[in-house]
Image 1 (cartoon, rainbow, N blue to C red):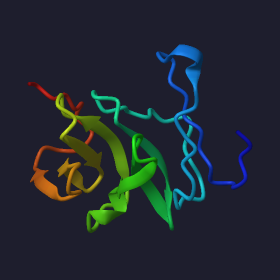
Image 2: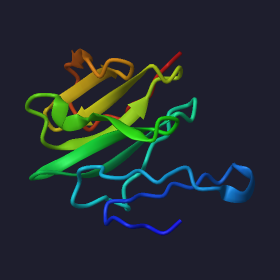
Image 3: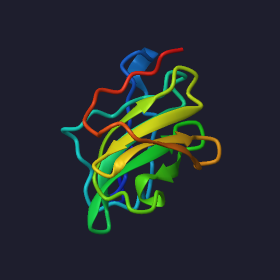
Length: 129
């Protein structure tokens, strides 16, 4: 694959035979991708969350690996400017976003914020089935 755009991202999986690329994902709408942050995969390996830059702030992007497109951005939650971490539910149907502004449970199918949690940000996030 020959990357033709600055924003092309190639994703390789270490547990696939031959480590074939799963990308590219073109036009992720970010100026910078943060490679030093963890990129959490959903448990069903369908979604990948990457951290980058939205207009003037940090942002998480959720990529649908089967459709090869961005399906959600943390800037869709009003007021969230400093996301810190993203953790998937055990069934890959939801994730929780921890940010300086709070914690938010999002349903991946619709992109809707299901609930805002009142626990202080910075606590470790773990889903319990």
